[in-house]
Length: 308
Image 1 (tube, rainbow, N blue to C red):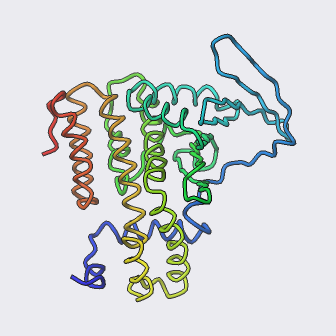
Image 2 (tube, rainbow, N blue to C red; image 1 turned 45 degrees about the vertical axis):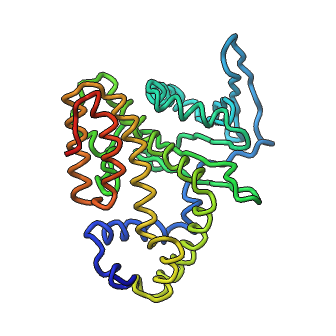
Image 3 (cartoon, rainbow, N blue to C red; image 1 turned 180 degrees about the vertical axis):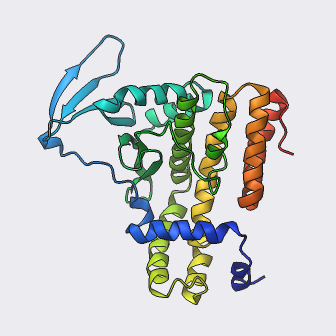
């Protein structure tokens, strides 16, 4: 099947996802710069140091508007969190780190030389989260990324397209910390994005550059995705802009699934979650099923919950 014919036979999910993506693209200059956390000029800060035995260095920085921030340095992870969000953020982080998946990934970035991961909390997009502000060095190696968490990520559920795992938490969980579990699932999703960027540096750089070109053509050709120029770009990128966006989101949901199935140990609820995830995949993401089925299979020997 040639490229044009393949594009005519897209599943029902991609046109919907494409509309979502193009709305995002039209509002932003490039995909790699979507996270716009509040910038702080270091020269305008004063610092109050709080050193405690066996505790990481905590720096309380007060900006020009007398707004306090807590900065914790833990290896390659830099946490920049407004003091009014400090307690909730620490609950979310504690929940994420309650699993081996969370601890392993956090430690990997904390100890990774040459790479700084910044984590912030923002009132913008309060129920969501996003990862961006990627920086690559001249050798094409990722050196920095920023995860921006909404200040209310322990509330709100996204659409199952393209978030089959996070949306599955609409089911009532028998856990006192269910809100923290929702927040940690969203954090795991964002860590999944960072992992993708690190593992596919050269491919991601190329895709991001061409997606910007794709965006400009799409916005000036009457939104015609059968434009020969877009078809040629899709060949070079390994898919259309919509397909690349979907692939990245679904891979990040795989990471969220690893955390969630480790955290939800009750068999009946774990099986219910897997069933809900599978139903969403059947409806919107059939092309991505295998990656989720593999995670479920890895847990099946312990929980007995099967994908099919």
